[in-house]
Amino acid sequence: MIIGILGPEGTFSEQAAKKWNDKAELRYYEDVFDVSKAVVDGAVNYGIIPIENSLEGPVGMALDALLQHDVKMTGEVIIPIRYCLLSKGPLSDIKTILSHPQALAQCRHFLKSHFRAVERRETPSTAFAAQVASKSKEMAAIASEGAANRYGLKILMRDIQDRKENYTRFAVLGGEISRPSGKDKTSVVVYLRKDRPGALYEMLSEFASAGINLTKIESRPTKKVLGDYLFFIDMEGHIEDAVIKEALENIKAKAGMLRILGSYPVAIK
Image 1 (cartoon, helix red, strand yellow):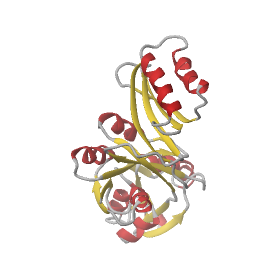
Image 2 (cartoon, one colour):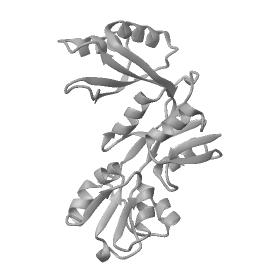
Image 3 (cartoon, helix red, strand yellow):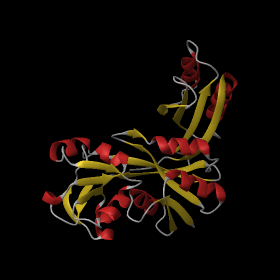
Image 4 (cartoon, one colour):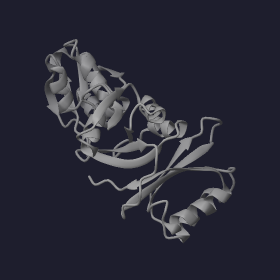
């Protein structure tokens, strides 16, 4: 089995992939779009991408990738995120701190308290930040302990995320929907036919009247005009459950677009 993930070596995506399947071969890609495209092209059997963080919410690029490519969510993985400040030199030499935008956001208060005047630079991944920081004592990276070991960096500070309880949810992408496991979740994306009073309520009432528990609802701009949104919805149950299937059929008749992203076993932290 080959799993495509965000690279280079030492990312949290790598940790998630090993938690999901520790025997698979890992193939590294530059961003989540490349990972999802690799699944579509058949270059990998599965892809694993971060889609939601407990501190910063949804990963917009990942949601866009789910829309752009014809892939299915076949599983999910949740891992704790513990950030470290890594560098070759001492704290006093640091002039630039690098990391992925999500990592910088999750350490916002730490950076403001300790490095208010230091430049912050975004990178495609935390591991890439560590890779770059390994070339200069004036650079530091926010990344994992594993990245420190991989790129020969010193851990200057540990657990620098703004809250100790910090988790990221990863989506496992494949070509087909998983079979029911008995404890499943279904993800869909809905585009309302037109913006009118009560349109969103009508959609949500279908779930409520059927007794379906929604675990997440997230709006995302369509990028066509201001105020035009798609809704990403997670719910308890499998697409093969009669109550889920009926509710989605009713919503499909009212919505401009309904796409099933997948049904998959619920992850355990």
